[in-house]
Length: 117
Image 1: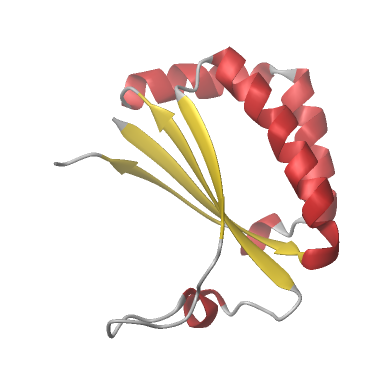
Image 2: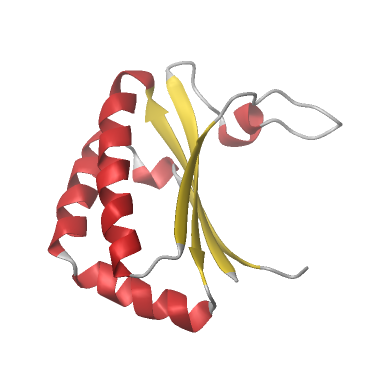
């Protein structure tokens, strides 16, 4: 199992637009082969249990909402295959341009993780 994780910082005044773009993209990505795609809104970013908070680690600004997206794939080969289809899909390109107009992607965080247990 491979998970691609995205952490988005969205201006609070753009949350509705972000959620609309995300729902459209989710439908397309599932159609193109992503196994599951979930979006979570931050509910508590305070430091606890001796850990650094997301607020500190990401330098979250007061006017930003934080969203975590998890995209699930069978294995690295499946992810490569699906993402090649995604990269060729014009619908996703249009949604990506809309996303870039409301989210500073250079401030988003992304990583790929393989299940180990």
